[in-house]
Length: 121
Image (cartoon, rainbow, N blue to C red):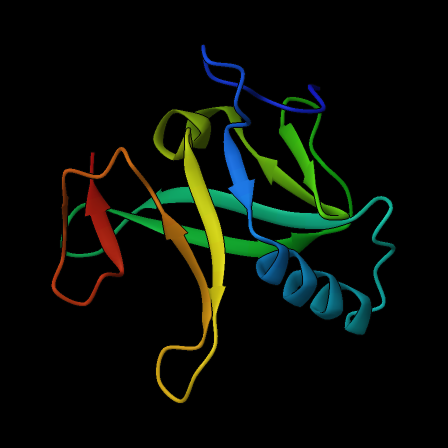
């Protein structure tokens, strides 16, 4: 299990903004999870009109082969298969009346569907 993944430039596989970390930590705590061990799992799955989509959930602890990125007090778990798709991505939280929630800004995406929920690399 690695405690931080990096690409060839030494940057973390996933960057988390302060606002995204704060929102996620509040939600993790509201679920009664220990933020010292639990974290946000970011993964890629088959689906959506463009072929792939992001998934996120809270996990009690990382899996043995997960990459773990810790930023702003938030632990983000990424499985090995998903690391290939999300490397260099930024996890943001966007508030507002429409579309409030977590969004992945991924430099590897070559096309997205019209609704922005699925992508292709």
